[in-house]
Image (cartoon, rainbow, N blue to C red; front, side, top):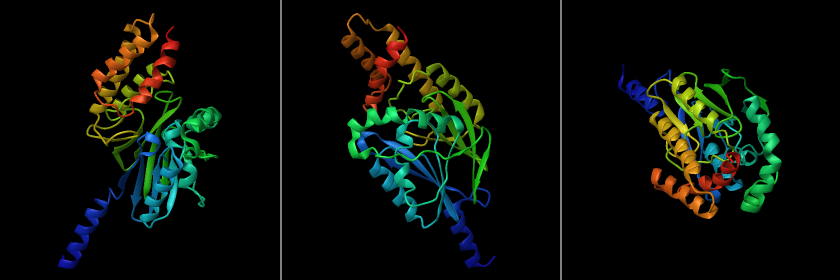
Amino acid sequence: MGTCKYLLVIWCLAAYGSPMAANLVHRFRATGAGTPVNAYIVECPSAAVVVDATLTVSDGRALREHVDSLGKPLLGVVVTHAHPDHYGGLVELVRGLHVPVFATEGVSRVIRRDDPLKEQILRPMFGDEWAPERTFPDTTVADGEVLSLDGIRLRVTDLGPGESPHDSVWALADEPATVFSGDVAYDRRHCYLADGFHEAWLANIARVRELVPPGSTLHPGHGEPCGLEVLDWQAGYINTFLEALRGADWSDPDAARGDVIRRMRDYLPTDELQFLMELSIDPLRSRQT
């Protein structure tokens, strides 16, 4: 092999991996509205696909700018689950484009069902950063189906209720150890449990642990890409929260809430996304009384 051809091969491997693993994954960390959340851009030599779409108008625009900077067409967007910090920025991401937005039927249905309530909650919190009109998934994908968009192939697993009222995970079909896990497991961040599906969430964690191959990298909705050990951490977080709720003395609700917060801070001594945990206390407590 000549020197020039050898250098070309080395450059291609550095840029895109081996010929059988030609997808690059870019993490886009949105920070708008004090709610850090990830979106991911999957890039192949000729195109790009986005997984999740952030919360705010500004972050949706910034995500679109990142995609445009690659100089490749956006062929589609995948939405992993039904929480607004993963679809609120869609309208800005796809503005002016005819781009399909994919989700399982359950995720798509719940987003549409719950969006009027999210409008009532989020408009006072975020004002114009919560898009006046939202874009929703428009193309459904069945459990186990492989979505093929140019050189990017993604396989979906429909999980049903869990962290949100409907969850899914997606993996690169040709690189199954690359998993876009949504909010099945946060990477050591405080978590939102207010939807109340904690038993189903724990079952989903066990299912994902069996589903994905050893050595997989999870690309979560919150936090850094991580290994499968985060699944055990997430199950521990959920169980600790439930134990803290049950063990608190609710004859004094303010003191009880403080006890729950201290217990969770002992489990995870950070304030990142702590407000999500605090927002979960009263809704989950009401379901247990």
